[in-house]
Amino acid sequence: MEQAKQNFRVQLFITILSVMLFVVKMAAYYFTHSLVILTDALESIANIVAGFIGLYALFVAAKPKDFDHPYGHGKAEFISAAVEGTLILAAGLLIIYQTVLSFFIPIQIHSLDKGLWLIAITAVINFIAGAACLQIGKKNNSMALKASGKHLQIDTLSTLAVIAGLVIMLFTKLYWIDKALALVISIIILYNGYKIIRTSLAGIMDEADIKLLKEIIKVLNENRRENWIDLHNLRVIKYGSLLHIDCHLTIPWYFNIHQAHDEIDALTNLIKEKFGNGIELFVHTDGCLNYSCSICFKENCDKRQRPFQKKIEWTLENVVSNKKHNSAI
Image (cartoon, rainbow, N blue to C red):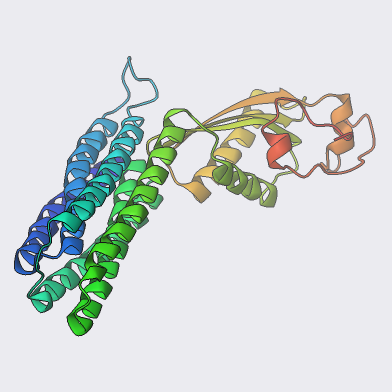
């Protein structure tokens, strides 16, 4: 809950900042009438609208679980990111339209030095805010904050391109660069908008996060206890900043309920220590069978029926499988 409140506060700050930066960029366009500066300002409009949408999404995601939403309201963040990606695409298309239109309605550029300083200020602020937003978003596993941070990063890169173009035009007077640069930036914006939409739709559809699964499996292999004979049917589902993880853990069949619970607690604490507290872990325990002895490296087991043959290294392929492991794997 505290993470959700922090996410909301960060998004509120980013939204207010986006409004202020938009005003600065429009002032720069007023001084220069530069199309590439207008391009940067139009992207900021998408930042503002997306910021308010993200703010509402985080407000909804911060709500506690209820009867109608037993897994919480975290999916709202994915919807927010999808809308933000769509707005980025719209901004890119609008920039292309404005650029093409400028070929038929020439606009004289002037006062580039004033515009350059104003745009440079927004680039510095955007870079700092975007880096902080991404860091907190990754720490709290917030899709909405990561989308906002990514958006600010894109804005920073496009602004740097704008600055480079303004400097070149200032010294060379080659004003055609203004239109060419606007087209290049619009293509980059379209591509990044697509990536944000693709990621958000993956979250909505509960697509497996292969990178995260591999990280979890790596941690489990490195900290594997001798009583963890087998692990399979591992699944990870994202609900905004909350991760829902479930799996089947094979332990010695003769363990009582308290001993089995101790192993589950050890597994839970390990995952939370490495990946944060925003995790719900549901573990189904299986008792080992005779064929499990061949992959069990537990020492001094007086119930062993077969000799140990080899330790099965947990991999993405065998851990996500719903089949119990044996020495034939």
